[in-house]
Length: 195
Image (cartoon, rainbow, N blue to C red):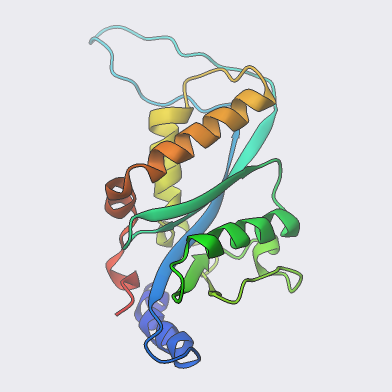
């Protein structure tokens, strides 16, 4: 993990060298989160000595939030999709591509899930993918974004249907996008500042 952090500036320099001179670089992070009826129960405030109840559902409908953030600029791109595969990942890359400033190039860091690394993935011209090392989720600040969204907007609830899951996931993602300072606060990493 430390080797990856130290080597990231060199990796970024290699990507910059292949681009037209003075092309702005945006460093993005990407991940997916499964949100469903079999939901997580999180901590909640309660008067000392009491045990507050929380709803728990045993049904199994779910959806995936595909989310990407650019912590330095406080922006993100996301889609809520029914499953994870190469096709849905290609849709997400197209969405990220639209969020990158015109004339800029996005360096996208993400884990090495099969649908991220396949040669069948359609990668837009304004994106370069940098795989994170295996078994290092702590390098990806989107993991912290999921934790925040679950703790504040998506847990301790019963989803009534698949459409309800999709609607609430979209609402939670849009709330996050409306708070660029939150993306910056949760997502910034000194080693990834792209200098």
